[in-house]
Amino acid sequence: MAIEITSKIPEKVSAMTITTQLVDSFYAFDGDTLSVKINGQQMKLRAKWIDCPETQKPGIPETEANLNQWSWGIKAKSHLLSILENQKLSVAICEKDMYGRNLADWYIGKPCIKNNVQVMMIAAGLATDLLPFRKFDLSDSDHELYMAIVKNQHKAWKDKLGIWSDENFQIPSEYRKANLGKTEKSV
Image (cartoon, rainbow, N blue to C red):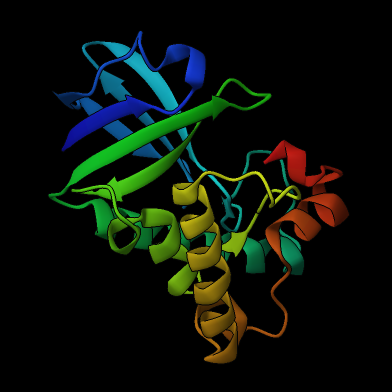
C-alpha cells in the first residue's frame, strides 16, 4: 500500500510537503484507527469525525453488550481493510488528539468527498458521527465533509444498514461510557 501524507495543521503546512511513500506495514486496530510503519517509523492515524464500533480489548469480560459491540467492531475493521486493499491511501493530517494519534481525513486516491474513507464507513452503516460542536467556522472542505457525514449517516440509518439494523447496538461513545467508563474524548 502506498500512502500520501499532507498536513492541514496551519503551523506545519510549510514544514510538511506532500509525499507519497510506500508503507512498510500497517495494522488496523478497528474501523477508524490505523498504525502505519513508514521507513521504520510508526505513526498512528485516527479517522476524523467518525466513531466505529469497538473491537475486543484484553481483560474486558464477554458480556452481551461487549460481544455485540465487538461483533460490529470486527465488521467495521473488515470493511475498512476491504476499502484499503490494493489502494493508495491519501491522508490529510489535521491535528493530534489527546492520545497522540494523528486525526486525519482519509481518501482512496484523489482527495475528494466521493473518495473519503470516513464517508464510506458512515454510508455502509459501520460508523457513527463524532462531529464538532462548533459548525460555523469550518473551512469549505470541512463543511463539505461535515454535510456528507450527516447526509450519509441519515441514509444508512433510514435504510437500516450495518449497525442501524441492530436494535441492540449501542453507539460507540455511549457504549464506552456505559461499559468502559470512558467518554467520547477517549476514542
